[in-house]
Image (cartoon, rainbow over all chains, first blue to last red; front, side, top):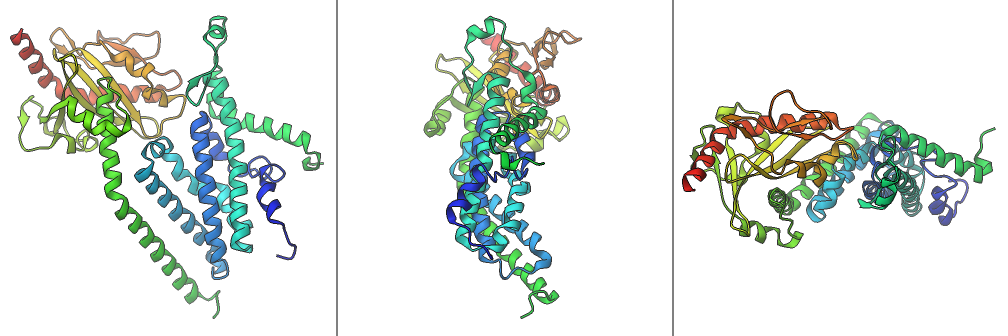
Length: 208
Length: 240
């Protein structure tokens, strides 16, 4: 790398200024799939942080040996192996969590954030910054997932983490859960609202 | 060495795949026993859930042994088959066979109040993947006591609602026999009723295909038990 980037900015930039979901627009597909409820959103966020950090480190360690022609394949093999190992470990030591995640854990393989960060960062940087980049982007992704999951579960089901939070009295007064919030299109709209709020605070991100 | 040459690329990918394969094989083999134990305990938990017993996760096996005092496999004529371990029967594969060659597991459970329940496994297809469950039936061979449903990947908030008590509790008290006829429970849109005179429950709104899957699963999995349940019911009447 020509320019020196500080560890702090590598770790914290993806939280907001360079957030993978709302600025880089990566990983939108899984945001649609896992955010109808808050709990899978949280667990998915954690799994992505782990897989992204470790695949970044591995790719960074072997980056100088990878033939350019097949680098995407190599990245895929590393990510897929890690995801399967994580899934197996969950099945052995955290069976309940692995059941809740079911198919989502496999979906991490196809998460664009992983390929995006491997290709853009880990291929060109040393292991430690790559690790921080993985953690940072994973957390940035998880934050958005949790925000979207929070609003979708609250407005769509009246619950949070499965506990009823909208009081019965409100239902008796005529309040109804918004069924549309549970359906995938509302995930996109909620993400769009977050992008809107985010950009109006960060004017430098606004396109001319 | 030229890192862009074909030979290097070829050797590189072979080594990579062998290493990745070895790592996966090692993980799989070293964790297999633990995963199997987890899966067995989870199956016991599901069986107990169908009779409304919810043990804490560290005492599932003990509670299962306490309540489920017998399990066996029957055939389409309701006769016990010897030498088959009911717990080990792969219900997923059995449901794909013709009804008359299936091995049909039955778990007999004795509750704290002394009543006897017969627990039957279910397996079918939802919208995105498999769905399964257990249904417990009273000693009269017809009245459903409780039901438990689970799924692999139904949409959270829609089809996935079948695993909630709000859905499965509806099954309590439904009758499988209408007079002499055996009619599995129908799953219909809330507010509607089926064409026949079978008992029915409300499906999940927004989860139509999953609800239909539950209905098809009940139909496919319970029908082969018709004769067995009939025998159970007759024996019960004799005892009285």
